Length: 166
Image (tube, rainbow, N blue to C red):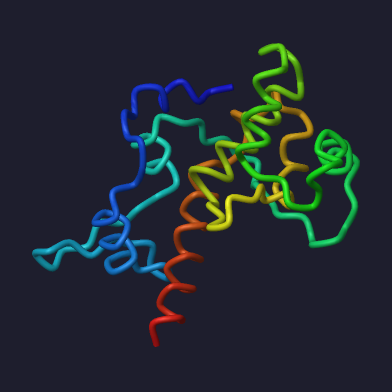
């Protein structure tokens, strides 16, 4: 699926200092990181994927509209009928471990965990189901534009964070 580079990443969590520094120094409108010496480092989607060792295809990752039904989301939620709508990453991880590694739902759940834990993190630990339709064909995950999506999520987070600060 193209995420082997994450195995070499060797970081258990984003250090809070780095996270705060990115919030302070990333300009979401210009797509640049302001460096200490005043220079600016322009960040492209390919830069993100090279650093993280993940694929960067051409297919845009989209969020479905809230409350808009989708068959893959409905099927996903059916695995967690006792917990829906509050499905946590912990529950998905447990369910993933019951699946054969070649199965479509193992792959989908892996992508759901990657996205929810590493890209578009949710503070309450719940899975973000609006991205699940992107994983309908999990064998094409490497064709998704992961770098663009990560950069977009960072930009949104910076804007939200700065809005709360002001």
